Image 1 (cartoon, rainbow, N blue to C red):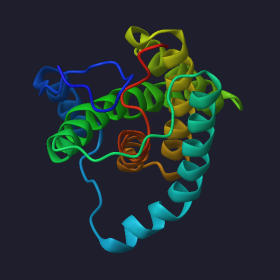
Image 2: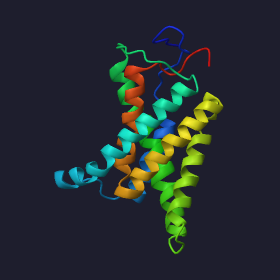
Image 3: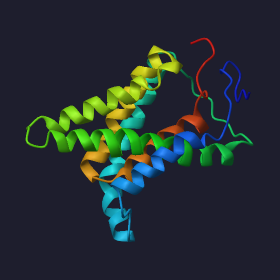
Length: 186
């Protein structure tokens, strides 16, 4: 168990491959080709970056308003293992499931409805938030809001990689600059 900053809850950095394997299988089944060239990546980054900057600002403001964290820039010797674990074991699997599978499936199911894309985005975000119930009600709310941004990025770019990148960006911002994972008193 690790405590990164004073007054933060402890957390355990573990490699959960059981969560990752389904994410990789979903990506392999739903997305035969990821980025094939630099131009595709740049095209997808253009809308992703501004959306995620707004998302990071809103989720961070909400975190402060809910008393969930405080500004505490820090460096940790577990940074590189955390990055690996968070990007490949958390963000990849969660975005493959919630955006690449659920949101994509619901969007296709409701494609004939004018509200189909909005409903698929909302459902995937709410389910994403609910999956974070172990962190408490505030965390569910914050994760739902974050899920709206990840889902919107996915909807606009049609690239699950951009949802993964957005998710990882928010988590990285949180890890490096704020109480991680959250204040103990919350």
